[in-house]
Image (cartoon, rainbow, N blue to C red; front, side):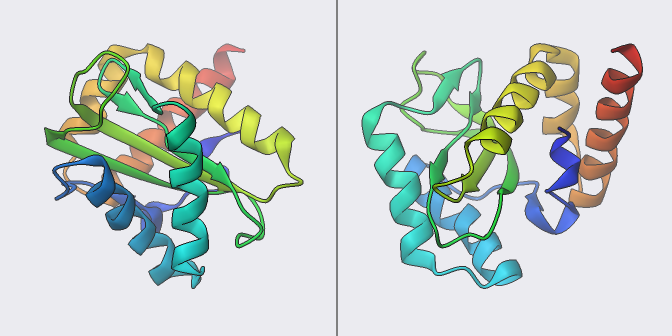
Length: 156
């Protein structure tokens, strides 16, 4: 599964303005609400409920907030980057610079897990991570993502 199969440039924000995790959730969910019309409170509740169990700030300046809700009709996601960093209460206590937010319906475990695995593979390459942060526009970031996924697919 490729991230670019369900995230387009319309679901990417470079230059996130948030300073902390709560602001970040609101900022990224705004993108889903604006582009897909999802019910804000249901989506926000799913993300917050998962976050209460354990921080999705996985370390190395990356966060993958995710949740399950029937407010979405399939796997959806948003990517955001911040050069300044966001106070996220990550597992390593470091600021977050790259965020992948994922939401899936309750009955959809497979795609959700595959997407998390793909993000893990992408983020192992610190050079790719750094290029994401430096990217100036959603369109450029999306093209970079497509190129990297094509490179990974060719190597498999």
